[in-house]
Amino acid sequence: MVEVITEVRIEDVPDDFPRVPRLGAVAGAQPKLLMTQYEGKFYELGLSPPEVYERWLNCEDLAQQLSQAAMASKLGKRAHMTEEEILAQYVPRLKAQGWGAPEEMEWVANRAGVILGWRPAA
Image 1 (cartoon, one colour):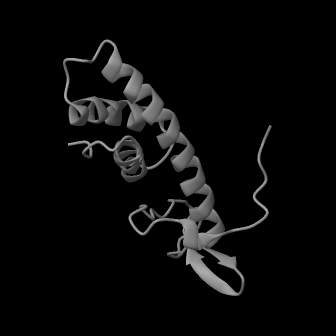
Image 2 (cartoon, rainbow, N blue to C red; image 1 turned 90 degrees about the horizontal axis):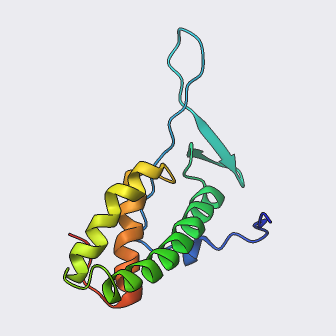
């Protein structure tokens, strides 16, 4: 089931959440600036409040899931690793999945550490 966002609470998005503009292309010889409009203001593509809020919700959900996986790893097959090492080994995997920008996936790993009370990924 797809969740429809009916209320954008941009103030809920933490200041440390990366705001990464999306790339796009438009045909033609003249240079173009891709923008999106929201409530009478123009934003770089991917940086309007609803877009940032939705990306943050997705990344927060992913961080919650990652924190559970990291804890299971710490209690299981990666008990010999430090907490930072456990989180750090997830970063390349997250980036390879293409679920978000590299900066967002680094934020996800660090957020999972915060959820667990661990030090951030190296």
